[in-house]
Image 1 (cartoon, rainbow, N blue to C red):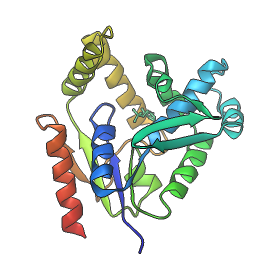
Image 2: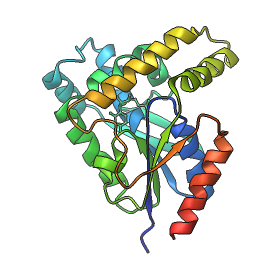
Image 3: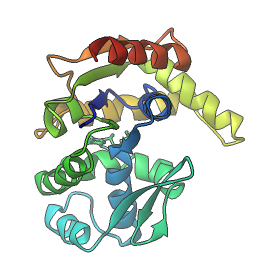
Image 4: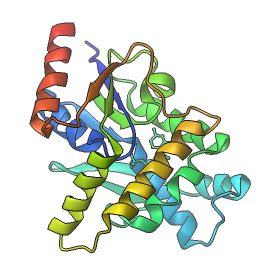
Length: 222
Ligand code: C5P
């Protein structure tokens, strides 16, 4: 029997990856972090001094790059040409360049094909920006997870402070708003709620509440 696929889209910092990971565990599904794939290519481009606006060079780079999502005993990581880049792709430098890499059609075409292949057998929770609209338009459950910019910046701010990292709330707010704008206004597969997606505003919800809510939707639909 084939299992269902669950698509979770939404703006930066809405809690998609945390929610998707927990939901996948609960369902014993595979979690697929599509943002990590764009981040990995962005990290490599920065490392090789490739201009993020140069679509041809980025495409050449992507062809030479093997990107693997790895799930080693519950720890989800990402490998680029066998190098573990799980941590490095979360840097502010990568975060602030990734939307420029992700806007190119050649890059998206390749990434989307990879993502569709990963979901072929079903049993996945996939998060991103265009999963419900472009990658898995036939996904059985589609969620559009949002929260106010203030709340998303606040969460990121507290997360960084709790890790002992320096954090500037106003700067975070500006960076998140900018990334939302780039992702929503790009020409190809912009961030947008699929018509058949269920919108969940997580502004005043806990992670657990969001997971339970989506879990109930999945159970009810099947
Ligand atoms: O989800 P995350 O914040 O890691 O995504 C990083 C960036 O990758 C997004 O801001 C967006 O530019 C791009 N992305 C995308 N399509 C996806 C997932 C991510 O364009 N499906």
